[in-house]
Image 1: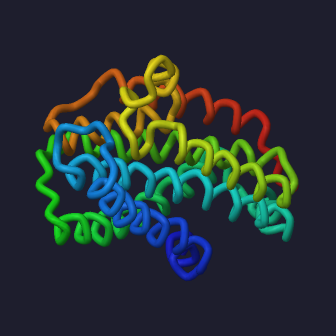
Image 2: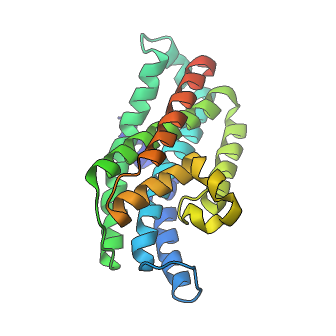
Length: 231
């Protein structure tokens, strides 16, 4: 039910599909006209980054905004009075996100293949990146939504999303950020992008990036469990 509600919401669809597809097409348009300093085919580099952006859009921004307004309208309060524990809420959200992300992979991956994408797939790396990235960003979204008012959550989630999309290493490889590349790689957005690129561009699993995502997932989950307010 959680997944159906997400897919019926126009704002959620904008974050889940429309923006990533615009970034994919816009990135290809820019690559044809501006030297982006990349050696591989633009679509082979952009497609994994756009899939990472889609995961971040759905797991972080959409979850934070939806949960913030669920708190405002008392939905979370009613869940809090049920036998559902806090970690049960988190796991339920993550499960719904994985369903939505499966739809994103079909739509965005299909569009990328139609544009000439030739992925070199490391299946283990793709699955682990999707699961750990979803857990990390889902927990971060719930962390914000669980302590701030709905309006503040809306503003902060959109601001963080724009900052990470522009400078967090999601679509553009961390190496392109020069002296800041080391910092970008330990951001959850940078680790997510690097891990997807390793698994879909180079055909191997980036265990270092997966480790970074796992740390973010654990830390954010613990903080969420301790600070989340149901009212």
